[in-house]
Length: 397
Image (cartoon, rainbow, N blue to C red; front, top):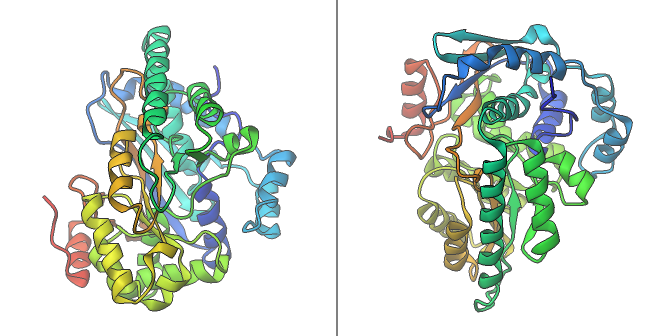
């Protein structure tokens, strides 16, 4: 068996930042995460079950290395007690189960949230790499390299466009849906070497450390969703999550995710206090132009100069889409673009649309009311209806 995951730093930065916050604020929370494939694979994922189990066994044998802990501890927002926790941390195999139901691969992680929340990115990387190992590697990599050179040509052509008020910056967000770990490293290293004026970092902490890049990330949906079950009034869960984040990071990691119950409901909670404290907002569903215009209008309403803030776009981006959004917004605010699958899995094969989402916390269902149809993941329709009623969110179809 060739291990897919060889370093526990091979995950997104925001897993560590959320992990630290929940360890400090809600260490006793219980959680359940479920794996889902949203599109039709070329062959049944259930065929991968023996290999997935072997990879999970290997994952649970890993521990953080001292040089990795030293790197994390050198990030000013990571605290020493969290590094000490990671020093003794091991994933527990009894907290995660993979099984097959007909052609469907099911993976469920269930247990203390601070022991199971880290599984997500590793599981997605494992399933992706095992799945794509069954395809012709040489052909895929040759096509991937051809497309990567085309992206470099696009970036060089873009450099000749008129200078705008803020620079164009993009980041690699590709761990979870990459063709392979080796391919992601080749892509990121190539971008760093050839277009450093545009390429500014990676969410992959291992690659950021080894390639000398800035690690990128703040929070994901699971962080805010968990607060739906943390004992606060449901209507106030976003404010409670943002407040705990502010207290944990005291000005660092200031980009807030907006689409857990939709942009309109988020902005209703994102008052002057939060708008001043957070550096910007991240888009992950719905029309990005509509979303960005709502964000700028909200800052204007609060009499905040949007030129001091940043809008980060991360929903299914490729370079042409990022260029269009940059042209639309860059003279009015700072921008950033997190590009995932289009960088780490653009090799001529149809990528898997897989996720592993928090579905329950402390025995209660939790959910995301996405601004995009098909992204809502919750089996409890009663809770979904209640959440929509509380936040006055209509179902997206």
